[in-house]
Image (spheres, rainbow, N blue to C red):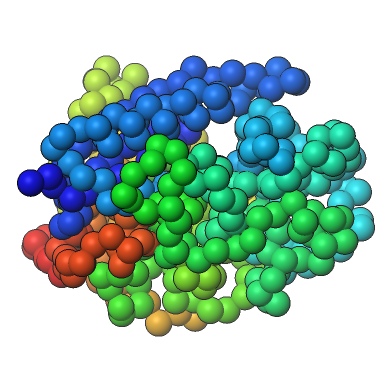
Length: 461
């Protein structure tokens, strides 16, 4: 008898993966691919959309024809702020423009002069002024720089919904993509911002469908259902929302450390916007206040410097043990330089050669990073009932970071969380009721508790 599974296509900026989860949400198959970037008409690097399209079909054909598995459902999770413009035949009209592409200053000024003060607009749309990262402004740019393309757009689909469209030939919009710093959605009125209608953009946006709904496939055909896809950050939050009902904060760590608070219902303030706060939308349409810190990048760059000073391999620092005596000694020293967490996060350069050894230097680096992390997380923690912090991603495995974080938030329970592929798992859980008759397991997230006393015990929920 074939094993019943759900297939998830998870598209990151670097790696594109296909996972098969069984009915207990254990990964039973994994396939990975990487594509060479192409360039848009201006020579700026961008995703190779055709390679991605072919990979989706190839991967799906492969698993559908495997004798070992019976695919009951398919869903997608991808990075955000990326739109595919399709014509009435479903063909892309442009390259998949990179959200890092510089946005024209004159066009940006024109937009905000027409639709209001940047701060007021950002507060309404929960979207700090981020240029092309505000994907709605990408569509605005198409209208004024490529009017002939704009005229031929049938639908502007965020990347997860485009991948779903490839399989179902049905176009829908998803609230997790719309609500991801797009400048499209008015969070106060719970509908599109007035500029979307005034600029005749709303007619280019497909109808909104719940992320829990499913469609039937057109190609490749089969007896499976298809989700409409989710934005990756919102997908990664789903396993926590499903498993934990008491208020919590999730710090999702990687290059960026994003503090997500699904239980902070207060609107963004001017100060929070200036500190790079924003709101995501969860898969049920509720705002999730978030703050960002470039901590993974900071760690990577500074570890290279420390390794160079002490002639060590950078790999050593990934497994360095926590030493409370070093922390106590460093905390006793007067430190005049502090990280600045206002506006864009910065990091004060240190002279790492002044430290006794690499262990001391690295502990100081982690003290600096956690000080920044505390300031960043506090932005979404205040006025919130949250009593727990979950940390997933790379920093959850860093025992120095985790112990220092517990010390920084002594009034909260701090846990390192681990699970197999949170983003893909979230996309699978979103459509659980459409393919899986078993109950969602209560052990899909493994937790390790960090106390202020630096003692760790295994916890499970």
